[in-house]
Length: 158
Image 1 (cartoon, rainbow, N blue to C red):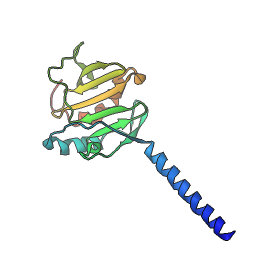
Image 2: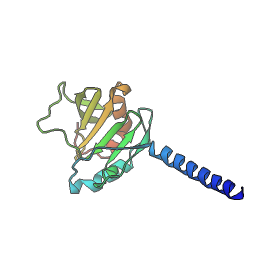
Image 3: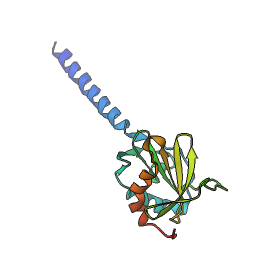
């Protein structure tokens, strides 16, 4: 009888550990790998570390670690996720359908997606994209929330 009680305690402790770990895992998000130039990595890592904890009223989540360390250069908020990818350029030849937009002093090139927008930043020397699902319409609200941080990196006048 004494051994059974101890076994139950061990099983209970293991179950609590598994629950705690799965709760932590629920906050992590995978971000597709993308190529980032070696010279851009330090700049992007610094920028990402300074981004706000909340965008479009959504809390920041943890990017799952990858072999290429994309978690250092990208940030995500909410569910569905708003994704910032520092070092990601607009596709070659991309021209925004309706022209560039200015949000709190930062110039963006919007790309309409099936369910939201991807915005490419044109105000900093580093390529940067932000993908905002349509659930957060108007999608530019998310850009306003990160504008203050990006403002510290503006090198190209709008």
